[in-house]
Each structure stands twice: as C-alpha cells, then as structure tokens.
Image 1 (cartoon, rainbow, N blue to C red):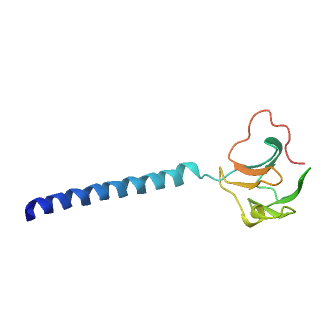
Image 2 (tube, rainbow, N blue to C red):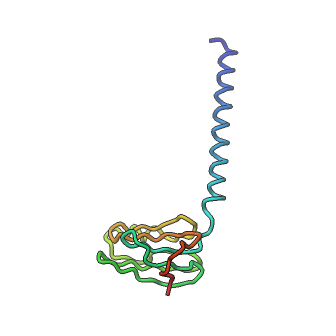
Image 3 (cartoon, helix red, strand yellow):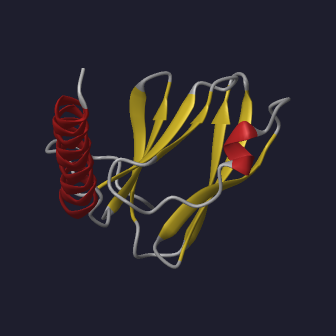
Length: 129
C-alpha cells in the first residue's frame, strides 16, 4: 500500500471512532436527563411483595423485620438508606443514600429491596404511617 491509501484508511478510521464517541456521549446525556429524575416514593419489598410506600420528602425511620433478620431504613433530606442491618456482609448498609428514580438497595440475606420510584402505583394501600 502506498502512503495515500494508508492516509485515506486512517482518516476513515478516525471519522468512525469520532462518530462512535459522539453517539456514546449523546446516549449518556439522554440517559442522565430522562432516566434519572428525582424519585417521589420509597418502596419497600420483602420477598418480592410490596410492604410499605413512603413519601421521600418526609423524614422518618422504619424498622424492616423479616423472618431472616432486620434492616433499619431511614429517609432524610429526600434520600433513603439502610442505616443498620444484622446480615453478615452488610452490603445494603454500605450502599449509602439513594434518591433518584430507579435506584435501589438490596439485602439478599433478608430478601429486602428498597427502591426509589417517581410515581406511586395504583391500588397501593401501604402508605407510610
């Protein structure tokens, strides 16, 4: 191959890489804008069943007790986290705060899932006490 064909080939490769980078950036921005809106509700699932729904704007503590152990959920300043748990690895405690739509904290040993959602499902009657 001569120098001209090598330069043409490299130019095409650079353009292809730039197009892929631009597509990746646009995709990332769209996901950030549309998928990560602020959540309005914190939902607690135990054994895949919705047990409680809380308004994320109201500070509170909630003790989640299961047959397998406990988790202490706190909601403060429109963020939720598991503050304490008696599971062996405490990954759920290490997760920290969640506040955006779709974020969740999962405690596998206790079969507990805490998730943030932007809307409340109809027919949910387990609103916070």
